[in-house]
Length: 311
Image (cartoon, rainbow, N blue to C red; front, side):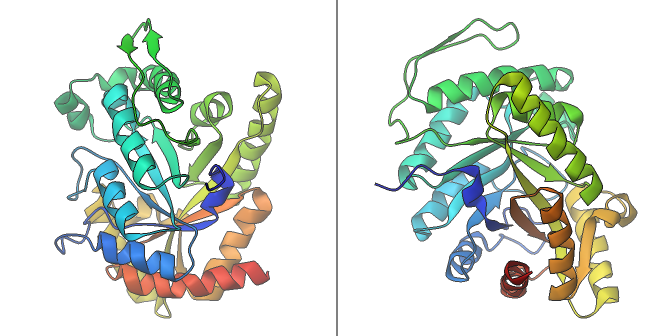
């Protein structure tokens, strides 16, 4: 049996194409997963929305398919919007992925809220998402441990028997988000923190906060995972134009809203920026290509990984 997976096993990973921001048709999810594994990446991740600006695949179903075409790749949710999900059914879905990919699942969760309409469609109030996330994480954690649950609420009363099959070991939990609430939630309830849209300076400050919170809660310090938006290219002007289309298609925003956190340029430039995050305390990385040709980006990101390892 494999050793239990940890957040550090995310290593140098990639976001798998489960969104279609360029409106190209069905994302090449399985081809990307196979290529990511063949290129030696450590992990592959998928995001979550019920309804958003682009078409999007449901993440647990997507990872179940990825589990069938990979053998080594660690699989992550980056991140499940748990406050608009039934935590018992979500635990069942994640348990299924864990059964198909033993000791290869990392469960990332977050509060969401960018699209209130999807919360309404799911039947949950967006205004309560932070408190619902706290309760849902407790329920989810217990169910993935193989425990029965009798949780009184107040927002999320749940009574559930043990769900089988039980994962051979409980998948580690990661909290995504850049707010102080997300950092504190990660320290209190999870094993990892997924940082996004932050400067190296702010990541360093958050890592210091994680250490302080670990002492407060008498828990191990969370592993910091950095989600980085990248476009490896020799034509920076063309790369920015493609980033502009990506941001519009993915988030419905102008590129200026997130451009300062995106890295466009050569393998050396991307590796240099990642090294700055590593120096700030990031222990693992997830690369999100902002280009139409995700598979070509994986080829170049493999070179970035080699450069980073040599720095």
